[in-house]
Length: 274
Image (cartoon, rainbow, N blue to C red; front, side, top):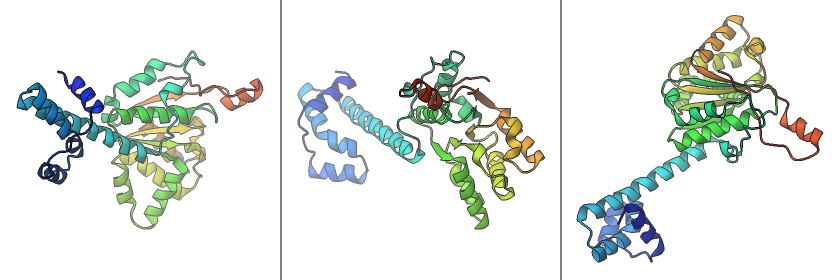
């Protein structure tokens, strides 16, 4: 019997409790899945005459699989991603110039995360930048990566407060836990020396080490409205673009299209270039 058939058996039978001593040992070893399934699988082993290694493999496989599922759930909960913004609900067909294959490649071939490469999404409000970047984040979590989504202005204020309290290195170290840091709406950061300097420090800190995904309503040519100093603007753009995928989403807002059509809006749309 395969492990798949073992799984089916354990889900359709009454759970047989383990002995008190075995249950205590499994609790001490923090093996809750094995504790829950050991009685049933041991009974099945006795009935069907499995070799000992097969029982052990079945128990450990269940424990590993459920532990991984719990880990992914924890990472999804900590990510602050919108739960309903997935690739499955993103309409690529509405904009033929969008390369769905390119977006899917970002979710399947995650070596770009290992290289600390970035994803930059540009376009006016309401075209689906946040939807697409959240969908990318969810897909990466499914592969075992850690992701954090935040409004750029909120994170900048948090880093600015940390700098005032002499805790900026510690805050940056906390963000290092995440393979991808998503900064939504960079264009709304205030053109303020203190704010833009901590944003630049974050970009520099993660350069070629950890990945960023940034959405912005304005192109690079207008980033002088975000960063105070021209030299800082050029340096920030240079670091972000050096290893990046750029998605241009210069289409009409889906909300405006919905208002004109007089019905519920279609899912967000995007135009992609590299």
